[in-house]
Length: 279
Image (cartoon, rainbow, N blue to C red; front, top):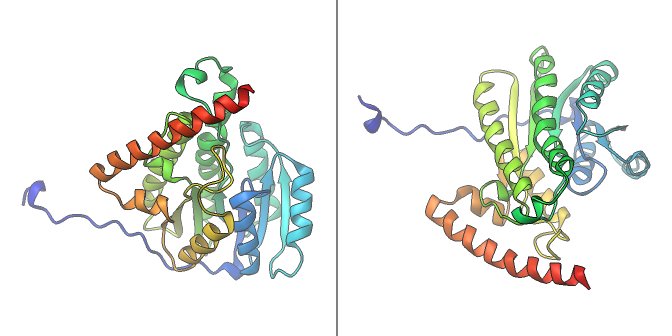
């Protein structure tokens, strides 16, 4: 049988749900937004949670808040994920202090509202930092922790948070969209590579979360996390919602139309925001 007539391959996007009561979860960017919401939900499920972020004061406040009326325990580690040295130090600390670590949530990200033209006038370190936080850090942390996960006698997981912009990019935050598209590709590769091991690989694809760099549109972080976490509990490995789910399931022709519609809207919004900033 030649390749043209072979039956289509069906990628498995569901897995056996993790035992969260016995899980220890590292969440990058856990001090705010989606990371904060996911931390709260893992705690309610009975997990031990470690959150990271650059601002230690914010992490302390989150720890104090989430320690109340939750089944799990929460800890934090402050540092800059753009730093290779910090990523090594973080993983060494986590493995030493929490040898039961079995879940990595690569959530931390930074997004700059710039067109390609304006990116050309920016200092390179600004774009480099965005690439390091959004892409280098998830790949590096995964490579550091996966060998340890493979030695565990229980189910482990890598959960990468990307975005609907991984499928429908925009020139108004081109570097961000490109890093998330690359992380989506990396996630698919990881899932296939480790499908016969104790490591499950998930991808969470948020739609626009309000408020955002372009205004007060999209869905609330609570609405999204409630739905995404329920899908995660059901064992779904690629999780979209609202517009990001539409993009995830769209055909190439549909994506082309969605790309034009989205960027036509962004063009108007970006022009308006730029004019306001000049006032």
